[in-house]
Image: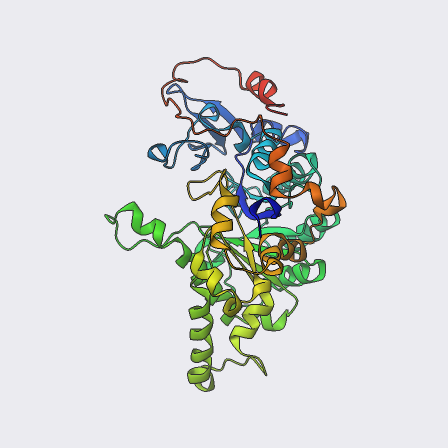
Length: 428
C-alpha cells in the first residue's frame, strides 16, 4: 500500500493538560482547591495540588525537538510544541503527520488518575475525575469530532464508583477508560479477587475498553539503582507483559468473556512467545495449580480479550498472524521521545512492506474503530482521511525540528491566564 493511501489511527498518544482545564467543569465549591499551574522563581511551570508541587508539566513532551534535547523535561509550556497542550495545534500536528485519529492518555494526574485518587476527600477526588473526564470528552475530543477516541480516568479507590463512571462516560460516547496495570501496587485489591467485578461488568455491558498503559502502577522494571537509564527504557514492555500475565491467569477474562483489555505502549514482538509459554504452562501445570480454561487455551483467551499495539515493531509485523491480526493496533506516542511523529507514515510504510492491504487497514485503523466504537467516517469522507489528503491540508504547518533554549523563559513575569488565551487558537 502506498503510504499516502494509508489511514492512520493512533491508540496511544498523550496530552499535557492546559492550565484552564478545570474552569468549566469542576463544581464551584472546589474551585479554590482545584489543581493550578504556577510559575516558579526558576521559570518552571508546575502544577500545585493538595499542598504538593507536581514539577513536570511536560513529562517527556519532546516532539519537534532534536534528540540530544530528549529527557524527562520540558518543564514549561513555552518549551513545548503547542500541540502538546492545545487541541487546535494538536490537530494541525496530526494533519501534518497524516494521522486521522488519536487516543490521548493523561499526564499530570498519572496514567490511572493516581494523583486525584490519593486525595483524602473522596468526594472532591470524584468530582475532580468527573471534571477531567468531561473536559476531555467535550473540550478535547469534542472540539474535533471524529479526530479523537475519548478516554476517561478511573476512580481506582472504589469499584462501584468506577463502574458508575464507566457507564456515565459511555453515555457520552466515551468507550475507553485508563486503568492501572497492577492495583495491588497502589494498595488496592488485586486482579485475583472479586472486588472489581462491578467494574468488569460495566466494561462488558458498555463495550468500554480497559486501557492499561505501562507505568500506570507507578513502578517500572529496574534492575539496579545505578543501572543506566537505557536499561529501564528497554525493559518498559516488560511492565505490560507482567500485567498481561496477571490478567490472563486471573479469572477475569473467563468470567467476563466480553471484556476488552488494551495493553498500551507495550509493543507486540514478544507476544507469540508469551502465548506459547502460557499454553505450555497450562498444559504442564494446570492439574496441580487448579487453573481451568474449560475448552480453551490461554492463547485463545488472550486473542479474544486483549488488544496490543506497536509504534514501529518489524518483528511483531512479521509475526502478526501468530499474535492475531485482529488484535493489533498502531500507535504514534506523540509527543514522547519514542514517538515517530512527524514521519510516522514513512516509518510505518517501510515496516509494513509486503503486508496485504486488508491487513494494513486492520492494523492502522479498522481494529481501532472496532475495539473502541470509533467511526471517523461518520464525520468526513474516507477519501479525506488518508495520509496524503491530511498532509495536503496542512502544507503550511511548520513541523521542522527546533531546539528549545531552556533558559529563554527564566525570570519572565507571565500571567498564565493571558498565556492561555493568547495560545487558545494556535495554528487553527
